Amino acid sequence: MSINGTIILCDNVYEAAQGKFIIAGTYNSLACKGSRLQLPSLECYLRLYPEKIGKLPVQIRMVDAERIDAPPLFTANLDIDVTEHQIPILEFAFKSRIPLSINCNFQNPEDTTANIPFSVQVLADDELIASTPLRIRFENVKSTDS
Image 1 (cartoon, helix red, strand yellow):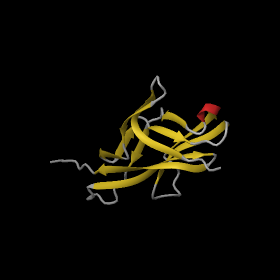
Image 2 (tube, rainbow, N blue to C red; image 1 turned 120 degrees about the vertical axis):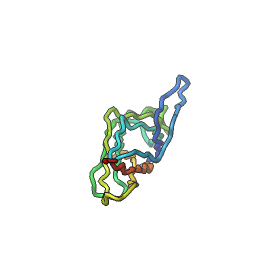
Image 3 (spheres, rainbow, N blue to C red; image 1 turned 45 degrees about the vertical axis):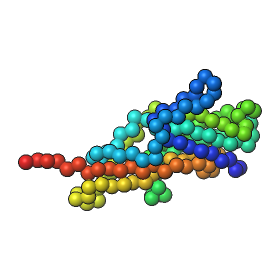
Image 4 (cartoon, rainbow, N blue to C red; image 1 turned 90 degrees about the vertical axis):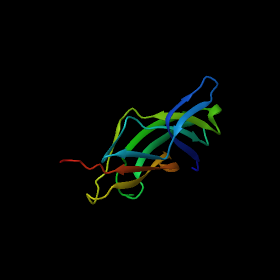
């Protein structure tokens, strides 16, 4: 199978009445103060180019781009019913309903920032078909105890 695809991370995406997708607030990096980032959800626009009609198992996952052997931080499995009118282009919005918490352990207490690269990936039939980078910058907030 050789399906191609596109993924765009965004704050909000929805399908308008005319069938057009409205994509707002695209990003490929996030920043937070402290050692923990809380995302209420992960939202993205996906465009796939399926080859045939029928069920298409799709997985969306977020992985540490530097630690290939680490388990995904987030995984969603979808069974997409591809219809005749969705060939050659299948577009849809995805929004996770599960909050995502990402922690950073600063290696050195004196470090002021840490940049961690992640990748949000789309797989179809267990084949990687699209990915986008997501870099998270953590700012080490030091307490100001007197």
